[in-house]
Length: 419
Ligand SMILES: *Cc1c(COP(=O)(O)O)cnc(C)c1O
Image (cartoon, rainbow, N blue to C red; front, side, top):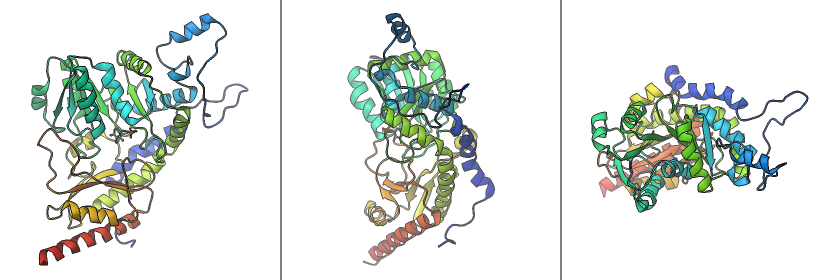
C-alpha cells in the first residue's frame, strides 16, 4: 500500500506548503493579550458571555457608544471580548484593518452585499460562486431592487468591461470556485472595479492565509471560518475583513442594524482552531497534492482541478498570487462514466465522509455535477465530477480507498460494454 503514491518533486511540494509554514509562527501569537507588568494572562483567551454591559456613568456609556470600530464593550449584541480577539486575529491573517465576525460563512457573504448595495444598483457575481451566495442574490437582493448578473470566472478584461453597467457597485468573486476551482485574476478584477466606482468583494475561504486579498486590490474579503479556521467540523462562523475605513463604516453599520454577531463559544472554538490551522494544513495540503497527482494518472480520471496543477483553470494566477494550496480540489471523470457510476463509487468509499462543507480534519467527498446552477455556458467539465477534501488520514490509505472505488467503477463499465 505504501508504494501507491509516487514521490512528489520537492519544488512542487514546497509550492503548496510554504504559506502554511510561514503562517504557523504568526498563528501562535495572534488575537491574544501579552502578560503585562505583574498581571498574568491565560494562553487562550477565555469564553466571555454577556448581554448587558455596566458603566460607571451615563457619560462613560455614551462615550463607548461613539466608538465606530466595533472593538468596545457596549452591549452583547455588538460583540464580546473573545469575538474582538478573534476579529483581531482574522484581520491580521487577511492583512486587513478590521474584521466583523458573523454567525456563518454565508452571513459573511451576505453582509457586504447588504452594506454596499441598494435599490437600483447592479451586482456582478462570478458564475463560480457557491450556491447559497447565488440564491441570496436571486431570492433576496432582486426582491430589494438590485440588478444581478454573472460573469464567466475566467473572462478577460475586455469581456468583463462589457458586462459593467453605470450602476455596478459590487463585483463579487470566489477564487478558486469552491466547486469548479477556477482561480481568478483578482488584480484585474480590482482594476475594473476601481474604474467602475465599484467595490470588489472576494470570497477567500479556500485561500485563507495563502492569498492576500488587499495586496491584490480587493476591497473586502469574506471568510467562511467554519472551514479551515475552526477546522474541526463543529462550528459555523464567518468573518468579513476590510483594509480601509471607508469600506468599514457601512459594513459595521449593516452588521449592527441586522444584529450580526457570533456566539462567544463559537468565537472561542474558532480562535482555538486557528492555532493549529497552519500545522493541520501543511499536512493536509501535502496529502491533497499527493492524492491529486495519484488520481491524475488513473485512467478513469479526465482532469484534476487542483489549483497547484496546470490542469486547473486559472493555475497561472494561483502560481502568481498564492503562497500555498489548500486541501480541497475537484476530479472530473472520463465522459464514459455516468452519474450512476460515480454515485456507486462514492457510496462505496470507506474513508471519505459524504457530506457538505470542508476544512475539518477529516476527508470528505461530494458530487459537483448537477445541482449547481450556472448562468454562463462556458463552464462545462465534459464528464461527471466530484470534489474531494483531504483530511489528516494517511494519503496512502486514502489512495487505497479511492483505488478500490475506481477499480469497481471501471469493472462496472466493462461489464456494461459486454452486455
Ligand atoms: C462553506 C462556504 C461558505 C459558507 O460557510 P457556512 O459557514 O457554511 O455558512 C461560503 N463560501 C464558501 C466558499 C464556502 O465554501
